[in-house]
Image 1 (cartoon, rainbow, N blue to C red):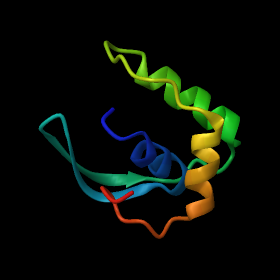
Image 2: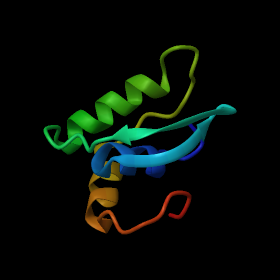
Image 3: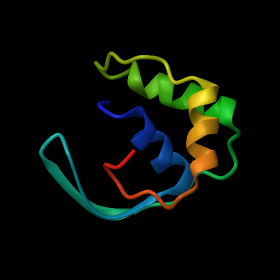
Length: 79
C-alpha cells in the first residue's frame, strides 16, 4: 500500500525470496503476470488497493507503463 511502484514491479516482474508483509514473513515465489496489459494491471492493483479494508489511490495506466519502461533491474524498495 505504501509504494505503488513497488506493487507494480512485483506484478510485472515477480518476486522471490523472503518478504515481510504487515509483520508476517513469507518466503516463496510470485511469478510475473505476463498475460495482463498495462490497463489490466492498473485495474487489478486499484482493486487490491481498495479491497479488504484497504484505502488507496487508484493505479493509473501511465504509472504501470512508466514502471514497465524502467525494466526489472530495480531492487525492492528503490524507486
